[in-house]
Length: 312
Image (tube, rainbow, N blue to C red; front, side, top):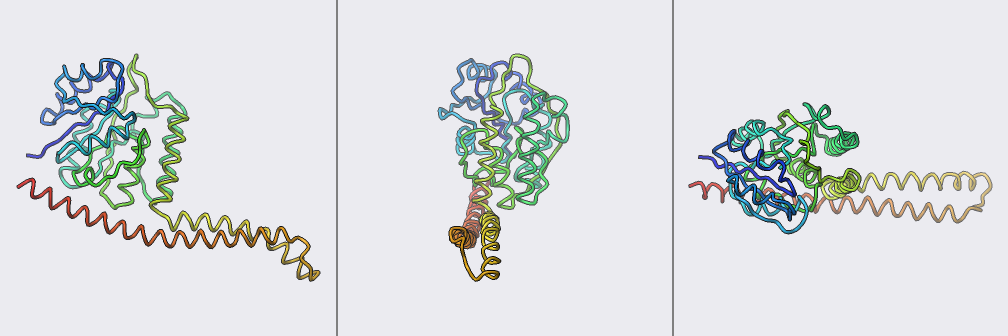
């Protein structure tokens, strides 16, 4: 039989963790429930243990660090990751699990934004931030993903064992989505219910600090995954600035035969050289990126072979 693991990263969720575990035990009794405590200062870990979950600890602070440990440690056919704040009803995970086990998805996303998120979430800047991140990702990668930052996802074995976790904090959701898009994994989205945190439960997400981190992560991943487009865009902007300085100097030279604005000419030449160097960097890095993609495909083939051998 297929094995499903429920992965719950937690930091100070004593108000909600018991209900989250109980709901998954009721709706998905066949799944193993893992709670990874991330240096909680309350009774989260003990409550989770008393409720029957498998409790482990990650001492490096940050959700990304927790995800790294979970993905490395646990063996399963389907991995369902959910926040421990009781904002995602457990019955929603069943459709995501089925999409992964049926082979329709390597990453199944619980789409809040097409459902009740904007009605339940009263933090205005969170709503705007979710839409901004979604629009940036879809524009860069030509995709139509509806919810980038959701806290409920399901993953295949291939995805989990090939995903190199680089982020340390809440930007991990963005990194997972970009990795799936860039490496041609199958993505499935299912609209899900969303409810705001119950009274007494406090969000650990800092709207501005974590929002800036997410934006920086998107730009960094854009540079790393699409180097030709990134550096070509930089080259185009710099070239426009160079021409804006060079054209008046050229016109004046044709009119008078003189170049009185020598500093402008020198700056424009420097910008043109920088533009060409940027474009050349994009071409070089795109070749290296293609080689990296080939390595990823070979790695996925190896993972699939090892998984088949394990199943036998």
